[in-house]
Structure formats: C-alpha cells, structure tokens
Amino acid sequence: MQFSTVVLALAATASAAVLPRANPQGQWLASLTLGPVVEDLYLTAEFTSDEYSGDNKLHNACVQNGEGFHRCDHVEFDFSYDGATLNLTQNLPNGVTVFGSVPFPVTTYQEDGSFRDTQIVPVTSAIA
Image (tube, rainbow, N blue to C red; front, side, top):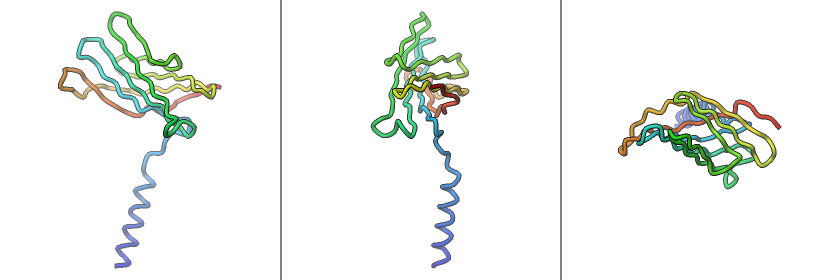
C-alpha cells in the first residue's frame, strides 16, 4: 500500500513538471471567429501576466470586415490577421507595450457557418 502511494505521488510530480508554464512577460487567450459572412472577423483576447491576473486581466474585443472596417473596444489593443498569422499589440497600464505573434489557423466549423478557434498567444517581445 505504501509503495502505490509513493508511485502515485511521483507520477503526480512528474506530470506537473511537464505542464506548460505561463510566459513571464504575459500571454493572451485569443479566440478568432471568421464569418459566417465572407471576410468578417471577430477577435477576443484576454491578456494575463504575473501583474495582470485574476480580476486584473485585460479583456479586448475587435471586429473587422471586408469593407475596411477595423475596430477594437480599447485603443490600447490592436491586431492584424492575414489568414495564417495573428499579430497582437497591447499598451499595458504600466507603460510597457507587448507584442505577440503565432500561426493561427481557423478551421473549426460552427453551426452558424462560421469558423472559430482558440489558442494562447505568448508575448514575443516588449518595450518600455
């Protein structure tokens, strides 16, 4: 009985050691929806870091359409998406500007005819 307890404890420790760690500079949890109208895009991105966690997370939402309309709900946040790569920029309240970029395929079909996927976008660079 003691042996199995030790094995379980070691297994739990080993599995916890391989969990992905949050980027110390921060990251966004980004959800990107394309459609159902061609060229319509809706993005939500929640920024978290050691300084911006819990109730201090920064929430952002943006829309873009094929007619050139591109707007985010906060001027401190912006994005670009070329159909393959998502680029994010955010000016934080502490004066630091953070940037993130990842390949972001959107392939999960939704019942309304749109496509939607979610992934973590780590901060890749920052300037003060």
